[in-house]
Image (tube, rainbow, N blue to C red):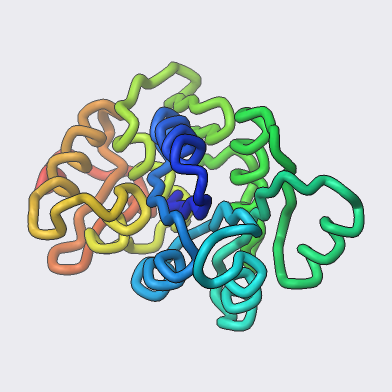
Length: 229
């Protein structure tokens, strides 16, 4: 999952980003509405954690523009205002959810995962293919019932591939969804992470390389030959 945090409280925004990183959610930070709109125009975010009262373009206008764009990006309004009329007006702007400060971090994570499931084809809370189960909320991966220990980026890449449901995901999309904007797009980060992920999941290999296109969870159990491209 890739998230944009928009909040002019620098310490809070950085704390949220660090917390999301610990649960394998890639996040960028913007401290004003103008920077937020610039980032949204060039990145495909799954969700935006948006404070309403920010410098530059107001948070209400940022929310309105996201909703008007028709993008699948979900908006979680984050604000100190907790009155009912404030929540109602936020939803009227196109927000998908609302969380008042102060909040519990576990609740923020739960709400983000719930928003990620609001797609045109709703996804289950726990993703599963070929005996591999991934629980984003509990941050757990199992294969045939046995726990699998993954690094944070390996977990994030596996989640993107499972959400694709067997569809091919390009290296560019993996970088977009599993890393923040500081990653070097010309590095071999994706290939190395996928290779390590394959090994951690064990045999039979389930992540297939589609030459020149990307990666996918194989439609059938794969043989050992040719899988470690």
